[in-house]
Structure formats: structure tokens, C-alpha cells
Amino acid sequence: MSWILLFIAGLLEVAWAVGLKTSEGFTRFWPSVFTVLTALGSFALLAMAMRQLPLGTAYAVWTGIGAVGAFVFGIVAMGEVVSVARVGSAVLIVVGLVGLKLSSGH
Image (cartoon, rainbow, N blue to C red):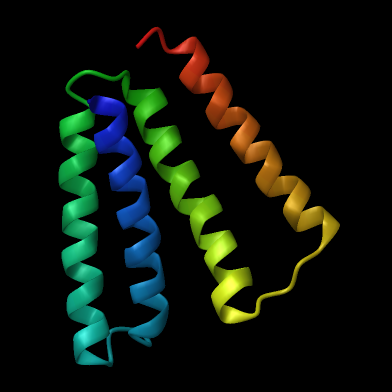
């Protein structure tokens, strides 16, 4: 269950990162509200997952999901640049996340 909570927390991290971008520095009301609510949800689920998972693993996986998710969203929905170096770097993050999951013992 902790891994599921952590995964959802990571997805909410992607959501609040997108909200932060679309809020234009908290100058747009509804995107700002969305950002705050998804950030609070992400933090709450991360805290719940950390009850069972090691701190370093949980935090690294949470930020990794957020980083890779935001990276993919940026390319797919916002037309950000795709390059071999950027994709290769994202793949390295995913490999690291898988390694943390496999070595966590949970």
C-alpha cells in the first residue's frame, strides 16, 4: 500500500509542478489554487508512505516520479525540446528509481 501511496504522491507532484508553471508565478487564481491543493495532497501522501518506507528511498522515488513525469508532460503537452541527452538523462533517473525499489526490502 505504501508504494501505491508514494506513486500517487509522485503523480500529484507532477500535477503541482504543471500548476506552478500555469499559475504564472501565482498571478492566476485557479491555477494557483490547483497548485496549492495538489502540493498539499502530494505531501500528505508522501508522509503516509514514509510511515513504512525508508526516508531516502521514499523521497528519491517521489522526486524521481515528479521529475520524469514533468519531463514527459513538458514534451508531450507543452512542446518542450526532445534530445538524446535529455531522454538519456531521464532514463538514468528511472533506472535509479528501479534500483532503489528493488533494494529497499519493502
